[in-house]
Length: 116
Image 1 (tube, one colour):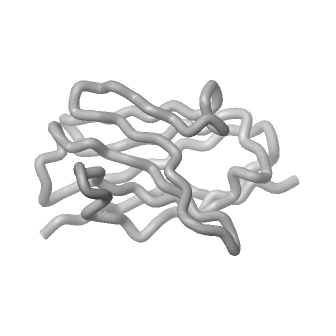
Image 2 (cartoon, rainbow, N blue to C red):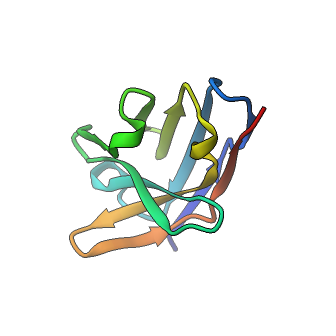
């Protein structure tokens, strides 16, 4: 049974930093293309970042230079370090596994709120 469990969300002031994590089990984590997707209040899903099995990283333009995705294969854990946070980064952040046809497994999400 595949499980993706996000943690680390919270309330942070604009300009602050936060690191969210995703603990994975039941899948071949090392070779999986792991992804962060977010959903802001009242809006649709937005792809944020992906890290492939070789450590290659990809980001949506709005977070480039501010967010860093990483993975610890020994711990089967995915991370997203978020710096210089803005109110528009407020969202529910999900981790998911990317496949050639979409995203097959999702966590329950962790809430990130950026507010004074």
